[in-house]
Length: 205
Length: 205
DNA sequence: AACTATACGGAACGGCGTTCCGTTTGTCAC
DNA sequence: GTGACAAACGGAACGCCGTTCCGTATAGTT
Image (cartoon, rainbow over all chains, first blue to last red; front, side, top):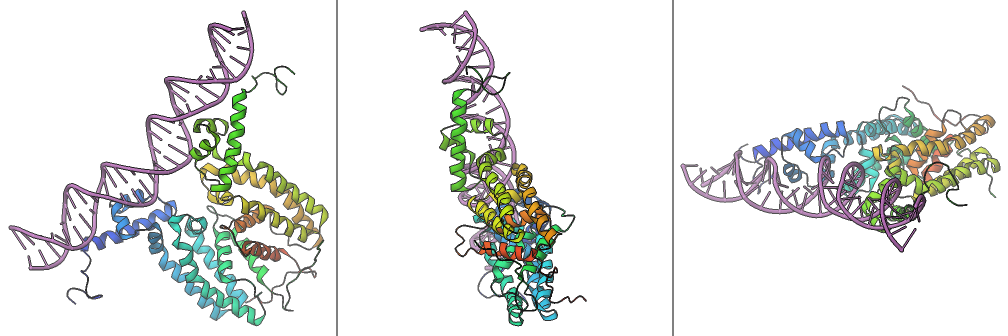
């Protein structure tokens, strides 16, 4: 190895640029954890010992920075879906995965709000989020539908949307109440063993 | 009637002040409908033909303005809970009320986001929202629990929180998908007629 | 050592919420 | 009608923010 071990034509990146990119990433991670994903750019820049211009050069969109910070954990959450799907029957796999998603969202203050905000600064987020998670979750849903343990009229995208909304709760959440509501939602997805969901009454004027 | 037909000591309000208060309310209603509850103050002021200072004098907190605009409809939604509770068995009453809440939230762009944002500008909102709705919904839940048709371990506050989160969806929502997820959540609240919720499997390593 | 593409920092711009105060105006006493 | 005063007004001003832009500094090369 001498000059360039990945691509051919373009110049290798400057050493200071690489250092700064890493510093920004670390600073953003800290700022996001402390202040949420809408932490002020100037704050992140100061933590990284860098001007704001430097952040924007490496991460032209705010969402690029968010994605860079969380990609690793997002990948893990996605992989978890596959792992659970192979180890548990669909309903239990889904329950456990919902827990994992809940933990992810709950520790990323403001992430879910950004996800659902519609704010143009966060536009690419929902698409990426769903594209990483939905296929794996859909597989669980399909398996459950095939064996009759889960209803078959709910799409993974909508379920993930709903779960991430329910999980995005304010600070400490002492009683794990958000987890409870996610569990209730998942109960609503179950089919009883007889193959029909319970509907004790059906008044309909 | 001559000087003052409501209270004794203080001066009656000036006529222009009354006019302006009404104009601001109407302008805010229009702006909220068009731009969401975070519509710029200057925009609202301009619509009302008024300076921003005038808005802040009548509504010192942004949340005061929001409450003033939506109070009537919020009252109606709360009253609807009582009406439905007296007309339908608990599960159906709950379903119908969730629909009503969904319609309320869906037509108030940004209202639910504000409700759950944690932003200090909206701090009083959640308390008021819950204090108006929770008691009536709790009555339905209690009735359902008493007759065994609903599970008894979910509090109205948490349910309302969850429903308002699920209902807050982006623009047109062509397929009524948010309504679907709310329905799934409510299904999860049901107890089957035998008095036990279905739990087809219970793997637990 | 000189050169140049690359990257840097932070001033500058526009938009926002909110505050503040000099000015206007409704109301009442006369 | 006229004057005076409290009430209310409007919008400039302040501080915070995201984002852009460009003169300056420098890593890497020759």
